[in-house]
Length: 348
Image (tube, rainbow, N blue to C red):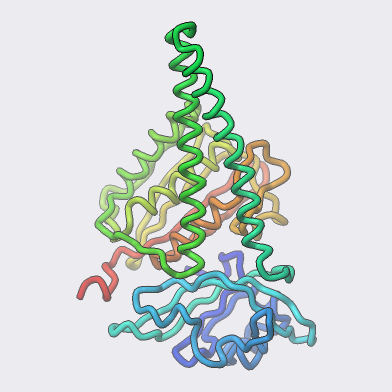
């Protein structure tokens, strides 16, 4: 994949933590030309350190590298010194490249600017955001169940069915929010466990559309996968979660009509894309759509603002990437890649 298409700063490192490739976003973040970044070590060139001043990468890779099953680098905050001497904060994540014996032979780091915040603020923000999102469905569930228990004999069958359908919908929303909390914990700690098996992505996409259509009846999606589209070795539940999030977002924030879900494969990778014909996303927001808690002010539906951040983490845990392309007035396309080959550590 062309790293210039990725909205974050990209640093590809070799086994000695030297930068072998970087994109223009990396140059924008650091103030150095790409040519000046390549060949250097971030620990030396950018004087990377944790918010409390401890050097980053100076003593080796992130602690998560010691677990041979971990490929994704949990998101963490670093401070770095730009070319002009100014100090800037960045949120960094990425994935390790491992050799046949499980040793780290390199890494791909993704970084985006962040304002420095006191320790613990993000955890408080997670609790505050999710608590707010939980309050509405739980209030609805309690209200309807109380009404059903106290007035069962006086309610018509169609009224009971309507209330039970709403209770079922709200219970599903609560389940999803709890799942998001668990995903955040597992992704950031590097403890995400993938239960891989061969996955038929065209069939999975069709199933996702049918499920979303039950909640969003107006969804009209065209599926386009070539006949020779290969299966992938992945966790079907996690990939379904990613696809569901993308399709639901396209229906809510884009346009439920004229949606396209299509795939292609090349050079050992598959790409699955969800394209809508909505209003599109302005350039100022494109770099932020995968950030935690980001919700565009112009959109009406509410949510936790965690779906795309989690989806990107789940895709990266599989060794792929999730990106977006958008044109104002024409719509947006979210696409993710997955490797088709069975990972070496699983093939042994």
